[in-house]
Image (cartoon, rainbow, N blue to C red; front, side, top):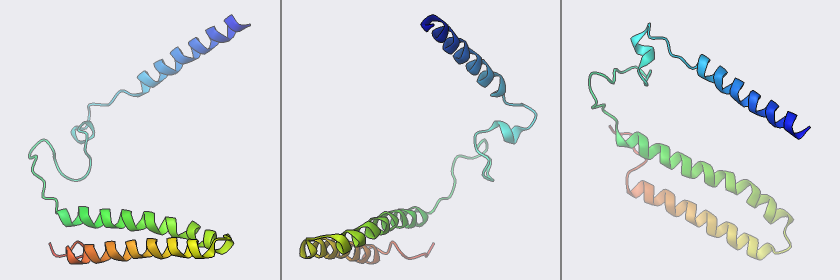
Length: 116
């Protein structure tokens, strides 16, 4: 029984690998489909693409505040259901001060401005 299961698994692995190999061939009919990027510019001509750092900084700010907002919702439920109300409120206020401090630092650093 064990020999049958082992051989079945090995045959299944070989068949799935062959199937994956067969369907992974790229067609060479279209030049744009062969190159790795399909985002509107031709990477074969020029490697210098104008990319403004403000977009990158703004996306990082969004990610940081998105994660912090996700952390705020469970914190509210913990404060509501906790026996240690003072300690929970202290942690919540500390977290909010860190958020406000980060927002002030980004405002001082002019990371929130969209001037290109």
